[in-house]
Image 1 (cartoon, rainbow, N blue to C red):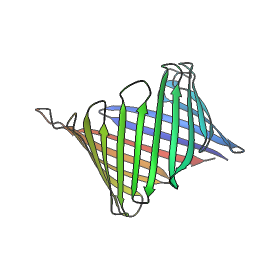
Image 2 (cartoon, helix red, strand yellow):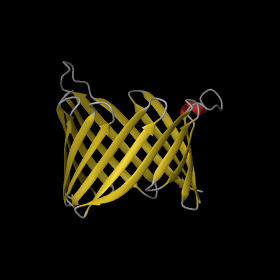
Image 3 (cartoon, rainbow, N blue to C red):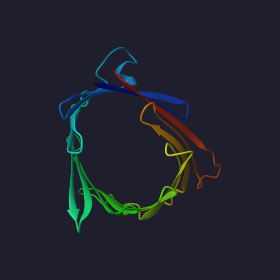
Image 4 (cartoon, rainbow, N blue to C red):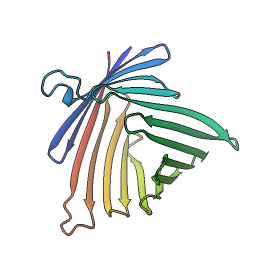
Length: 214
């Protein structure tokens, strides 16, 4: 079975689009992704990437115009009988390596960390889920020496989520409404405002994704 998805995004008067086609070859998934740059001036290799994926184990992605290879490996180990999910990401062109880990303490509590190897870019996040009522996520950014906060709540069933975020380093306040449907796709509307600016003009973005099975 072949699956296709199309994503459109509107950001401050600028519209962009991304499309992907994927199909299974046994337990391996093959995927091609194209952006609007692939077709805007006639068919070209701009914005084209090809990927081979084994879900839960690895992703190898090749950016055709940049001739860049990105490797991602995933694994799960148990620490004190708790699942620790590990992800290793390496991009060859800029020689950048990222290590990501999350430890599920119990259904309500999770600790996760993200670290870019060789830098001080490290984030530590704690997630507390109060049932299906709300989720609280304080996050400390070591590079910025600052806290970020997020609170999300499901509304109108399980498909709609309202989320509020605040970045203390930039004083950026954001509100997001998203809906995710396995059958039809998803959409997201975001509004943000920089409280540090004298003229506090909201910035609006919207994106939607359509999923098709061929």
